[in-house]
Amino acid sequence: MRILGDVTRGLGRSGALALLMLAASGSAHAFDTQAPAAILTDVGTGTVLFEKNADEAHPPASLAKLMTVAVIFDRLKDGRLKLEDEFLVSEKAWREGGANSGGSTMFLPLNSSVSVADLIKGIIIQSGNDATIVAAEGIAGSVSVFADMMNAEAKKIGLTASHFMNPHGLPDPEQHVTMRDLDKLATYLISTYPEHYPLFSEEEFHFNGIVQRNRNPLLALGADGLKTGHTQASGYALVASAKAGERRIIFAITGLPSVKARAEAARELMTYGLNGFEDLVVVAKDMPAGEVSVENGAVPSVPAIVSNDIRVLAARGQEDGYQHAFTLDPKVVAPVKPGDRLGTVKVTFGDKVVGEAPVVAGGAVDEASLMQWMTAKITGLFG
Image (cartoon, rainbow, N blue to C red; front, side, top):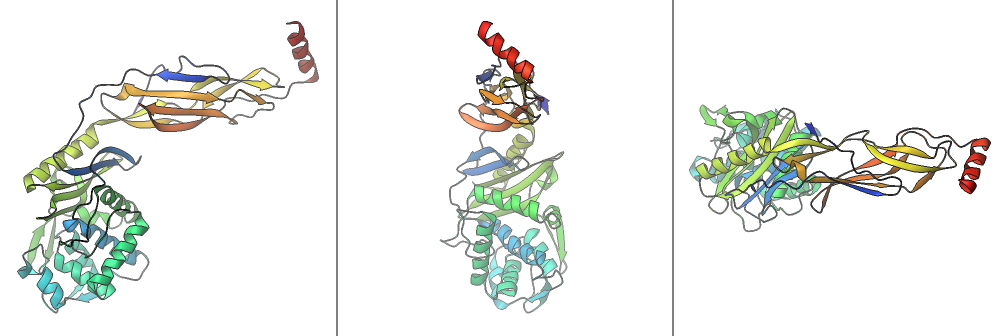
């Protein structure tokens, strides 16, 4: 974290608008990605660090399974479902999602029973289509009813532009997601179900004598989840998260032409998100903001200070492009207590407001005594 220096020059007195130019905006090279659609966010601040066609609709492929596990986790949390519960592997699940289907599978035997705990691992780690169908039928009775549950859960989470038709993400003309919605979904899963999130970083899963490895290419490079996806319609897609210290980023990409291209685009986004920004204090707590006149006060004015830090994630090379401005009340009436609000400070980058904080009284001002009041009046008359 860095605090910008020399942040007090050029401040006006009561009622003035004091604008501080920190410096000309840096000329950092603009980041881009080969992915046709992408988004990168900082979880702690909610800042969108990069986006490209983030609101375009795309086929979800296996990224739909993130919503499937969101429904499962919700039922585990409220007790409607238990990890030791077992569901039957139907012929539909076996035929449409099993070994003969040609898609990703958990290799569940027909008419066998499998626990919810194993199904979750099969969905997250192996991306098993059969596991999603078994879970959907076990929870809702059918894939179509489970899809309704997925859409209800999506609405609850705040996804506004996505629609689900099945639990595995295989092609359906009415099924689509946006990268922005997938980012919201990943953020929700990580923050709401921290007890389950470590499953996304498990590198392999052993089931029924078969070992399958996690398909997330970034686990070896520092990411700790979430999910890959691919169909011919979607291209190669990924939603992932990574941390550096206490700072977490999430990013989503889709439409890549190959596994290699997806891995490259994901690595570049992760590197940019973790290394391309600086935690910057643009306005510091207790920074002087000027003086505000006090009517009927024991002294004529009270110092104004900023109530709290305003911090931004600044792209490296653009740290000096931030400005801040104070708007102070013309005057206040005594008595004044420390912390009384006297105005506002706003931080801008270009024409966008990126932060705001109250400006408050930095000290107390009592009401003037009779002698002080008379002295002030006489001074005003003859001064």
